[in-house]
Image 1 (cartoon, one colour):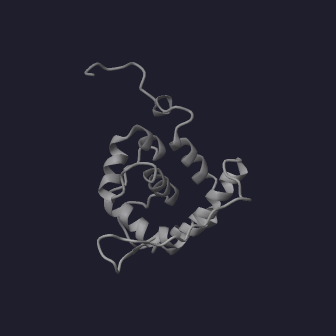
Image 2 (cartoon, one colour):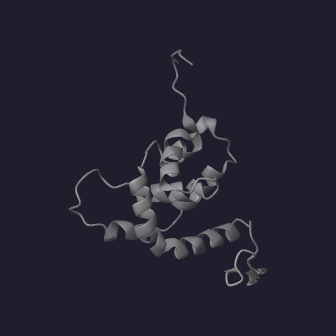
Image 3 (spheres, helix red, strand yellow):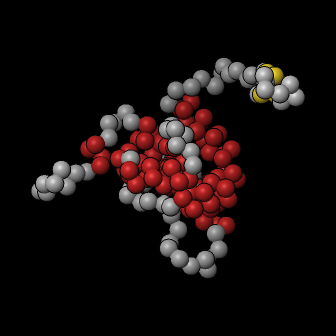
Length: 152
C-alpha cells in the first residue's frame, strides 16, 4: 500500500461491466437536456462561489444512492469520497452535503415525475419491464401502535 505504481489505476478497470452504476450513468446521459437543463435555467447567475455542478452529476449520485442503504446528504457526501463506483460515476467530483440537499429539495421535486417516466420507458425499450401488465395495490393496513394511524 505504500509503494508507488508506474501506471495509475483507472477507476473504469475496477468496476465490472454489469455494475448498476454503469446502467445509471447510461440512463442519465440519455436524458433529454431540456429536462435536466431546467436546473440551470432557474439558477441565478450572480450567486458567486464555485461553478455549479452539472445537474446530471448530482442526479447520478441520487439515483445511485437509491440502490444503496445511504439516504442522507451527509452519507452521500461520504459515499462520493469513498466508494469507487461512486467516484467513477461522478468523474471524481465530490459535492458537499449542502449542495446535494439543495439539489434534492429545490430541483429534483420538480422533475422527478418526468425522470421516472423516462426511466420506465427506457426499461421497456431494453425489454426489462413489460408495460402491458401492471399491478396497482391500494391496500390499507391498520397499524398496531395506534388504531387511528393507517399504513399504505
